[in-house]
Structures are given as C-alpha cells and as structure tokens.
Image 1 (cartoon, one colour):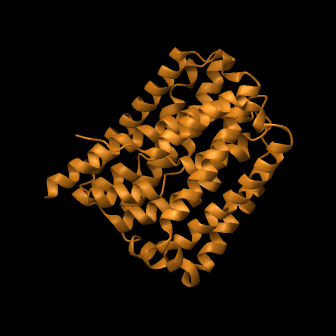
Image 2 (cartoon, helix red, strand yellow):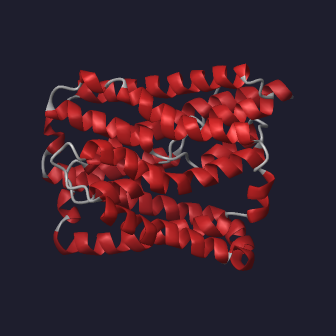
Length: 321
C-alpha cells in the first residue's frame, strides 16, 4: 500500500534544519517582528476556524451523546491518565522535561481537518466527526492549561494560569466567537478558499516551530538530546497512539457502536492537534528555551497519526466497496 507524502511534514523538517543552521534569526529585533506576525497569525487562524464552523452541521452531529462522551473522555482524560502512569519512572531533570512534553501532547485537543477528512474517507459518521473535532478545540482552551498547571507548578517554570487564560481568550477564543458570529456572512467564502487558508495556517505553525527551535538551539538545549533519546521519544509516541487506538476500538465494540460510529470514535479519539500544540506551547512555554523539546512529541505524533490513520482509513474504505 502506497502512503502519500505529506509535504507539511517535510516542511517541518526543513524548518527545524533552518533553525539549526540559522538560529540567530530567532533573536533580537527579528524575533520581535516574528512574535508580532505569529500573534496576529494565531488570531487569524482561529478567526477562520470560527468562520468554518457551520451551526447547522454542528446541530446535525449533536444526537449521539454516548459517542461524543467517549471521544472527549479519550482526548482529555484517557490520554493524560496513560502518560501519568509513567511519571514514577521520572527521576532526573532531563527526564522530567521529556515527560512534561509527553504530558503536554496528551493534554491537547483533537485535530479538526484531518479527523473529518479521514472519517469521510473511511465512510464513518461525518456529522459526529465535525462536531467532536470542533468542540474539542474549544474544550481544550479550558482543560489543557488546567492539566499542565498540575505539574508545571512543581517545576521552576513560570506558569501564571490567569495570564495564560487571558492570552488564550484574546488570541484563540475571542477570534473563534467573532468568526462564528460572522459565519453566515463569510462562511461560504471561507469554504471556497479553504485550501488557501490551510496554507496560511501551516505557514504560521511553521513560523512558531522555527522560533521555538531557534530558542532551544541558541541555548544549546538539544546538546544533551542523543539519537537514542529521539528514538525513545518516537517509540513512546508510537506506543501511545497504538494503545489509545486499540482501547478505543475495544470500547466502541463493547458499547455496540455501528461501524460508522466505531470509525469516528477511533479516528477522532486518537488524534492530537499540531495547530493547538504549537499555539498553546507559545502561550504556555513561549518564554522558555524548552519549547522546542516540548514540541517534539506532538510533531512526531502528527506524523504517526497521519501515516497510520491514512492506511487504516483506506482499508475501511475498501471494505465498503
């Protein structure tokens, strides 16, 4: 089976390479300009996100309460609890940073576009996928900082929950609600230009990733990260994804879900959003050199979920033909 190349993944790798060879571009006056661009870009990403939220499609997906609860519990409870099981194994400061990066991944909301696309490809419950993927991002604004606050308070990191929520409201929540309010006027235009908007979204994400890694490279934070560490992080990401996926499959079967609902539960309940990951990392860890390391698991998870879910979605699709 041939898996299509995701050029966004290649762009992420290229941006990290550029950050390694040109870390000076992420400091001084240039950094100030990049910060301004990324802050405005984040607001626009979520403004467009609000414009794409169709109230009618959300209402259409409201009906299956059991399915919604399973997906949201997997996203915001099951993922963090699984990672919490490994916290007793953390003994050094370096291990603490890696574990915190994994926990940040686990606390993030589900991705939107790829969840809906993959569910559609596999002929799952599309209205439910749209509802869960959309509502997950809004829930994450409240839940993700709460989860992180439980453990960042125990470190030397500067974590002001009030300031974080204020930033999230201004940069994320407010643009979403403005977009929703204007959806009936501009929603159709946004849908027609969704490909162009997706390119803009990815460009802002790449910018945030570049800034994060230049900061980490400037502080030589990756000097202590070995090839073995990277292999272990990738292995951990792969195991986490497969574990949650298999658990969601068993729970869906036990609850007697239809094949369409099982597809939706497995696909939406196992996804994590790189968009929210980069945005939230900027707000939660933006002043810290560890931001680059914090983003490693979510970037690897993004690659993993695209490859595996694409293959599974194609298999489901062929089964119905």
